[in-house]
Image: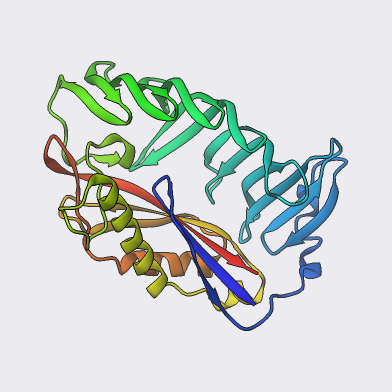
Length: 317
């Protein structure tokens, strides 16, 4: 048997590596009835396992559901064109282990389309960002609201990149920052109040994102990005192991770990938001806890605290 671990850093897909491991998973028949009450009305079960179901819907589409096995909380709802599970087509939803929503929208022929909502969690705060996808890319105005419905930010997109004006608001409804983007890079920026360097920022909201150490600063921006992604992959795959319980029970799926890169580059506040299973959660947190200091993120030339999500996909074959 082979098992595969894929890592995705931030929103960037990074190449995976493949390793071989002897053994065989528990027979899936043992889990046939585990999620019987979670099936859609009128659907036909096609496949099932320790933490998932796969069913054929009455309209001919196929639906994959993934669960946090310890609580049976659904964490992923994915609609596909056919049984191959290669092309998403239809409603898509995802949640954290505790049931908090993460993403909701639709696919058409494998591309995100129409209205989408993204929930953003950092510190004790949760925001909701909504906007349009056209042919798999963000387009037009995206608006972010806090839990009370107050406006947090407005950002314009074109071709999947930030282009045009942007604004941020504080909790009192006052504009704190405004400016313009050109192909994801800030062209102009004006601040109306001092920014709190102790506040945790999202990686997409800082001028310079944190980076994994080990790459020469003389590289071009594109070369540097690729280099630090590869350094990250090398670190993960030299340290992570497929947990025995998960391997023996045929458990696979994507775990997502949240952590903060501090102003001094240290990694803190490690928490698994999507666990897949208890031993996969423990392994992911162990490996993230081994990370060396990063190069910190920056805003206005000063180091800031930045929150990141690290998805790691565990796949048995």
